Length: 407
View 1 (cartoon, rainbow, N blue to C red):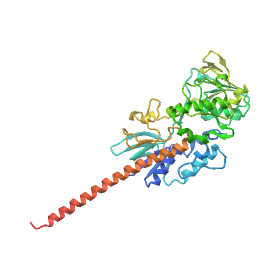
View 2 (view 1 turned 30 degrees about the vertical axis):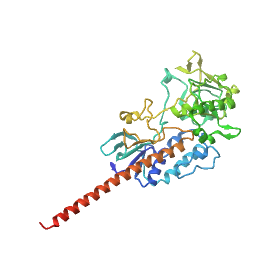
View 3 (view 1 turned 180 degrees about the horizontal axis):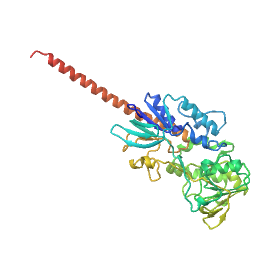
View 4 (view 1 turned 135 degrees about the vertical axis):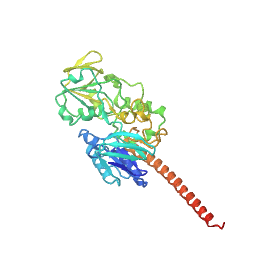
């Protein structure tokens, strides 16, 4: 089946970024269809471990036209986030087509043609809102497929209590790794090792009881040259010198990595205390696997029951969009937050760049940017069309008058 609506916008992805963009378009009276590959909204959130809470302050977790829930205190629980997104989708005055896994995106003379498992859609604009955390990535370590223990990605953490009494190796110390380690610190694993390649930029969740993320707008307003030393001072003042526990310091600061690379801060809420108490220990990076063993970069060996790979994600956009020149070498959009792409008019991206205030706030900013641009273009197009109609009418009237004159 082929769906064609003049001047419509297709939003691919019914997560918070896609839904926010659809809402902004609807509010401007513009036709929009949302395509979602899963059978329900908020699929990635449902898959996260049940004890998860946002690191984003509640006041930054609202969506355009819908405030964040106040039931959980400062940081929303996983199930609260799912309900938040479900209510937002239910109130959207636009269709959401589920099971619409996208197979091809092609540019046409009039716009874009999107082929999915349930049909083909022609549209003037396409918004890619599938997110930068679309596909969990585990490095192809030598011997990993013969490992007789459990190897999982951090996105599949599940109930952390199931690791009680087990030897656990967490690979990475970034945002998702530290989240897993925070939860492990509240349980009783037999041993926890943390394999680190690059040191994280880490800050405490609270300072003197106040949630640090509540100051996110202040951080966003600071000049770039001040951010890195400010965060390093915060880390040292409240968490100590983490190099003493084997955590190296990355050559770039946390502010630089967030603004330049989109790498979020690691938020400590128990991990560092477990390091201080020697419940957890840092080990060198993983080199390879050998049946029940994990060989580390210094040649030492450990025998974990479980390896949790907090090794990032891939966007999965290259097969669909790599030929358009819209992505960088890491597969991320060159215009990740609703900016206009002059080389690909009508193609937009949202949900691919973290900012200090978090993904929810970024979703609203990008949604407004995209919808305003599409609305302005639609108004200009209508104006030209109306001008053309007026000129045609004037010409027709002139011809009629000429025909009526006596010869």
